[in-house]
Length: 296
Image 1 (cartoon, one colour):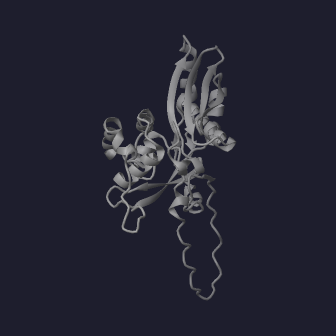
Image 2 (cartoon, one colour; image 1 turned 90 degrees about the vertical axis):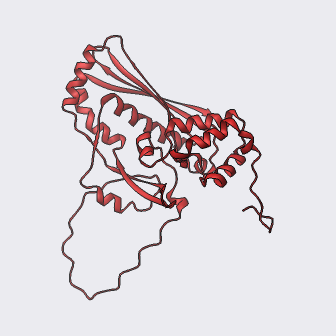
Image 3 (cartoon, helix red, strand yellow; image 1 turned 45 degrees about the horizontal axis):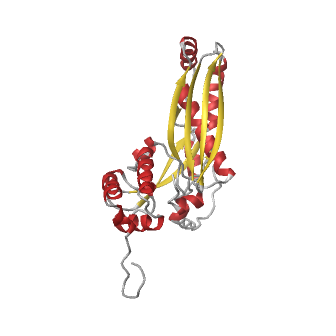
């Protein structure tokens, strides 16, 4: 999809799971038996990373910071490696990168193979909004984690030591840090009371909101459009030849959203209807100037 979001192109953090295909060998009797045995002893992956997102409250219109935990690729592997190898199972993955306009499309093919030759496979395709090597690597890691989790059925659990990582993470954008275990310090020596330092000022919203490669469950929890709806709306915008500048001005002036990724689900039908039936309303949209001649 063409990049209409300058902010996300610069940050190179947002991604969309565009497609996910599943395949398997003609016979699955052996691999199904082996996988069921592996899952019987497979422990949940520990949520060892913390991330933060910013979303808009429907009632107040204010932007709110929200932190959540997730299991990174290493944690997923730590959970599944022994159960898989102990039952004759292995995972192989094949990434590929294709340029799309100013961005790139990363595809990761994952196969869960059995010593009998049987296999399960899935393909995950994601879109990034620049062509940096770092973006390719991030999307590949994201696609690998999704593919492995889907094929093995591994799930995550809340880490009891998560609070330490969240405290060190306050105000960050879609960056993640390893959780650290809590250490009980020795009781402090008594000293005269000192005036506590004031809390640091909050980071600017632009720093906290860098976009996140969220799946549909995370987006639904925040009241945002699903990945499929974003993809469909983007395709319609391109199909109707709506210029980027006109689209962004109209979206901000009409609904108050700066990017397509912040559109909330309850206004989706209205936005889509305008794009599909009266695109000229967006194409010819002009922000009315005030008396000084500048745009409002």
